[in-house]
Image (cartoon, rainbow, N blue to C red; front, top):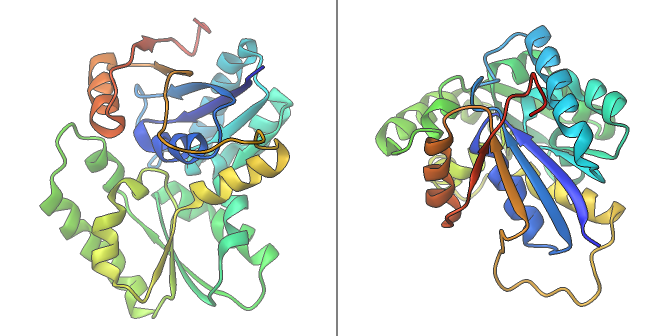
Length: 264
């Protein structure tokens, strides 16, 4: 019997968590929800995110989930308590998972404005690791650029220079990609920060925590990711999302349009 897993994000950012999960096990049935109608989450107020979190919980309630993987850092930062309290299933999040993989003393975090304003990354890491210097940087335009059907690589490079400059001046030793969209441009970011700075994708830490809780099947050997047992749901722009799934995941997959407010 397969584990029934929910993954949600405002858009394609959750692909990073999905891929990290499917590289480690094949005993899952995944319900991937992208709230494309209200993207981006990262510029919204905290009370808006908490309202959306309640709607997301209502939609997932009849999916009989075994666990929820929270792919959206902004919701993680603003409404983790709502997700845990309403769904009453194991919820695995990026921010509380990442401290386990931090190895240096001077750490930079790039994230959405709402995530940075919450200081959730700083608080969560500091509660588990002592004597760290943690510097945060808002990246308000990254998500919308990454969500475009055709990436404007030059603009992303320019934005990277702007966003990374304050952190590089602090001589950071590690950089946390504090939004699930950012690993999709990891190569660009890596070229900007150089080889001396370790880039951390929290999705790996999240999946590691998940796999500690739910044991990986004996004998599983990763060869190639299979999306056969993944269903994709969106709240708007179904054809656009179909194109993004084809581009980023290299598959043709049915995309189901849903309305969170009616639990369709």
